[in-house]
Length: 56
Image (cartoon, rainbow, N blue to C red; front, side, top):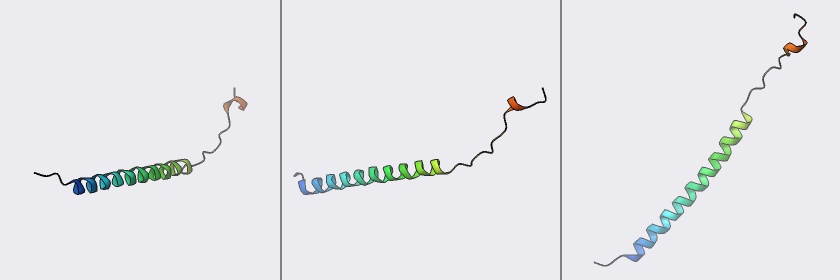
């Protein structure tokens, strides 16, 4: 039984390329999600503090 080296080398290259693209896609998605979270907030209305309240 012979080992088909060409097939194994091709499979190894395909796996490495797949891992490379998955890592690249993950980093891009992480950056997009971080930007989304940083941009998606509602500014809260400023409330007056109770220290200036004269009802004490």
